[in-house]
Length: 84
Image 1 (cartoon, rainbow, N blue to C red):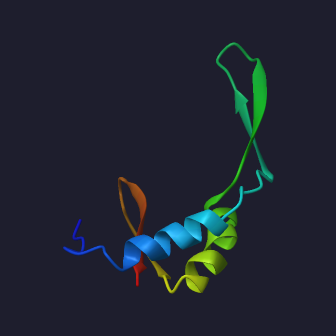
Image 2 (image 1 turned 180 degrees about the horizontal axis):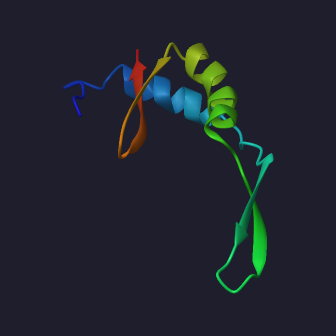
């Protein structure tokens, strides 16, 4: 992964955004069935919910969020880039 050599401008912007970001609502339910036939459920936040919760605060701090999706036979990958 390529990164900037200097972070003196993005670091304070990330701090401002991080300070403003609250918790992400866990509004999805996952269900797992075990090999024994038992099961359980858990709550989680999907990627769309996380982006929706943090993007306005990142933008307010002058940070742009870009995401590129790629995939092959092994699966799907999402690369997130923050630009300031």
